[in-house]
Image 1 (cartoon, one colour):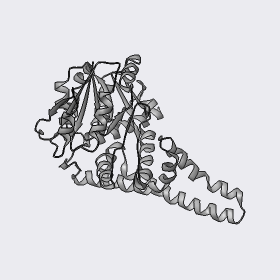
Image 2: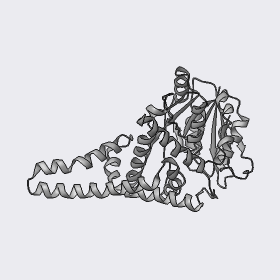
Image 3: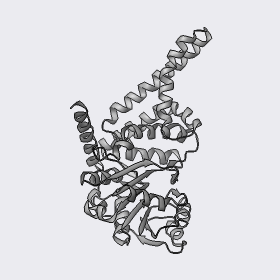
Image 4: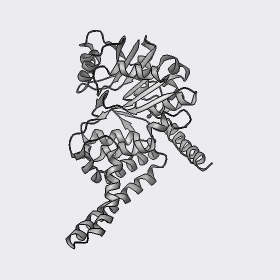
Length: 347
């Protein structure tokens, strides 16, 4: 049986669609547990309106814990399944996805399987910056390397994380990463370091999500995460900012070259913009979002620097809570992983 655990804090706008998609799953035995993380809106009422869904109240937040880690731990302690699926309240699960993910994990003898959902983006800012972010994530956390037992690379997406109960308990569960705001990556790293197999891939055919519904949400959410996801955020922000300036200059030179009928130089100037576009295109977004994403490069740099500064000051906030010092364990581990990867490549 699979225990589906959905932590929810003020998720009245999206929880209904999530639970409707989950309760419609078939082909496998499962239970659904919604953990209300001290919501002040209609989250609990909406969850309780679905027959068969168990609704729990998250325990009071222990010192040092993040809200999500506390909520999912509450759910895990009450779960009955030999598999645990942690998924976010803003996800929508396609028919049959629960069965297919379990079959894929079993077929590959994976202790942990994580899907990266299709990211639904609406509006200019979402379309501009989200492809840039996910292209960057795809470059650093390559699914082929993450899924390779010989590689030290480890990653997961907390929007869809399926794990055996045995592996979860063996590595200490979310209690072992209680202070981390990047719990999915930290948990995946612990599972892989324990010698167990993990699988990670894009799965737009299984689950989709719209992470943020406004720019303030997007800014706060990525401020919470970005500096932890990359080992040297300051350098990366500077590099992508420089890339934007170079791409902009190349586009201007292309216009001048074409106006002068200098087509050879126009082609040469197009190399960097085309390369940048194709690199971002790998992130599985629409063509119009990819076109706008060239304008998202400076916004990505801004968000990355904002996240780095917030962690430096110790004032990272999310959903009304402040987490001083949270996530530094993951940041240190990411830098160590990068160093190990460079050493391995040079040997």
